[in-house]
Every structure is written in C-alpha cells, then in structure tokens.
Length: 470
Ligand SMILES: [Zn+2]
Image (cartoon, rainbow, N blue to C red; front, side, top):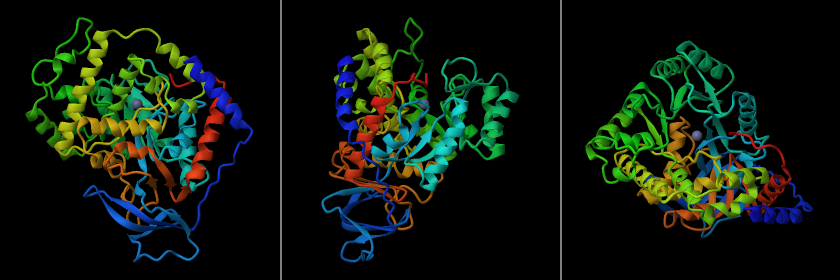
C-alpha cells in the first residue's frame, strides 16, 4: 500500500502546476446527435437519434433526420455512442472529510444520490449542498438525505444517533423534519417500540422511512409497517431460508450451510407483500464482493487506480485495517454469504420486487462513484439482465424517490444522461467508459471530465487531515 500512496503523490506533484479551472457549461440548447438511445422498457436501442436539451430538460428525442437542431445549440456528435440516463448511487454516506463525494460522483456518471445519514452536525452542510446543487451553483448529483441514522444502543459509529425510548425517537424524527432531512433512516438494533414510534411519527410528518430491516422486525413486518426501502440483502435472504438458520460456534450465521436452501414459496410470499406495500430492495451486493477482495488481498481493490482520488490519511488507515490474514473458513463463509444474498436478489427481482443500486460508500478502499459500476456488475453477476441492472440505477430509484420526470431519455424529463463509448447492454462494464455526463442540463464533456479528475486527484493529495466517518 505504501507504494501506491507514494506513486499517487508523485503523479499529483506533476499535476499541481497545471491546476485547471473547471468549466461549467450550461448552454441554453444542447444537441446530442446520432446516438444510440436506451429504451428502458425493451432494454434495446433506438438508433441514429438526436436529443435536444433546453436548460435542464430534455426538449426532444427522435430520429436524426426528423429532429431539427436549434440554430444556437451546442452540438455534440455521438454517432456510434450509447446514451443512457444518468446513474443513481442510491446508498452513500458523505461525511468523510477530504473525500470530495459530490464531484467524484459526477466524474463517474452518478447524477443522483441518496445519502443514508451521518453525524447530526453534518445535516446543515448536506442541506446546503442539496440546495446549491439544485440551484446550479455547486457541482454534484441530485441529493436526498436522511440526515442521521436512528438506532437503539448497540452499534458504535459516528453516523448513528441513539434513541432510548419512543418519545425520544419521535422527538428525533421531528428534529429531522425541522432541519430539512428528506426521509428517515432506521437501523438494525432498534427495539420494536422505538421502530414503530419512528414509523408513526414519520408518517404524521409526511416523511418516508428507509433503512436496515431491524433484527427484531422480520422483513414482512417492516414492509407491512410501510418502511419504503430495505437496505442490504442479508435480512431478506435469511427470510427466504427453508427451515432453521444454522449458526457457527461463534454465533455467526453459517452461510455455507445455507447455500441452495432458499424457498420459492417464501420468495413468492415476500415478493407479493413487498409489491403490495411498495417496498424497494437496495441489496448493496458489491459490498460483499469488495470485502472478499480485501480479505483475499486482491490488487483489483488494494491497488485500484481509483484510489488516486482518496487522500493518503484514509489509505493509510484502510491499509492498517486490512493487515493480517483472513482465514480460509471465514472467506468461505463470505463467499457463501454473497452467493446466498445474490440468489435471494435474483429470486425477488424475478418476482417483481423493485431493485435499486446502492453501494454504501465510503467503506475501506471504496471510491465514491467508481463503486456504483461495481454494484451494477454485482447485480448482473447475481443473475439480473444488463437492462435490469441499468433500470436499478436509473428509472427505479427515481420512481422510488417519487421523481416522475427523472430516469428516462424522453421529452419533458430532467436532463441527466451519460454518453458511453460502448454498449452496456452487451457488457455492463461499458457504463464505466463515459464520454459525456449531463447533470441537470450541465454538460461535462471528455475534456471537462478529465480536468475534473485531475483536480480531484490534486485536492486529494493535498489533504492531510484526520479521517472522519468511523
Ligand atoms: Zn449505509
């Protein structure tokens, strides 16, 4: 690891001298000409299309020979390129000082995101970011935030706000509402009394409740209670197991013994209840693959080129935490855990449960934005089609968040889109090969994206603070 950090510094020293300004191009009219445009319903392409953007909206989409390019429009030639809606990372945590989430997300094609909470004192900053991004005065993805994470005593993490009894839980929800949070985040250790108090108070104030499925509340009950999303796939996977859940001597779930034991009947029932209540699943599958890769000391993670965006103090801390061997038994459990969760996600997706793509950045060696493309790959590896995976990061989270005019390339929709070099329906890894990002009408072309990345690397190298977010 030391060597990686060192190399990053050298690279950065060369770049500092140039220190490019970031161009923010918000032309009145933009025409993207000659593109293959994703049709979400059929997961297929409409060929040789022109997309006209006016301000932050898509004004027109159609065959190149039928759509007139406005005279003063900025013209972007996209022949042979592929246009998809801007991507969501539907699960981030942004309270990591020195890691520039907002611009990193944009640089990687993430134009909308849901922040699942941080320390309470971070909320005013999040609200400011959200409003400045919406006003066009700050570069970043559309942002919704939980503000903080509500939990009973049990987990020691700076993002968590502890509530001890129902009245305190209600007061916390009231404060979140007052201070501008967009929804409420619940966590694993909540007691039923506190959980239902939060749900009730949030309903009263018109706020949705997203989050972990608390250990004391089975997923069926969380769905019936009206929790909008279930974050992570662990609890839903366990809910599909036929019979007893075997435990290891240390009390952990024996995932190896659970492989091949998920029940179709249970999946039918859970999917039906989720559909009836409008419950969305954000499985964060890549997180499992990621920790396996760290355990296996894989260079794809530990020496990822994306780590140049992360300041050295974080890399040093993450390296320390990744020291030591992970036992063969533990790795076998992690692999089985990933396999069982992936199977559960595939079964529920096939039964119509809406899946949304989220990453849970930041975690050790995770890079905001970069990680979303890994999650898309994990969803495909789990058995979703490439079209399903793209839907999970575009139209599905937009609908989940109640934004009716986001997530499709259609007239009247908000102008969030990516121009890609290759066909992501043929190979999901092509979502990484971004030529142009349009975020709320603002165009980041290849040169601007390159300059943005150079600036991000430079800033990361200059940051020498104390890592936060633990
Ligand atoms: Zn999270």
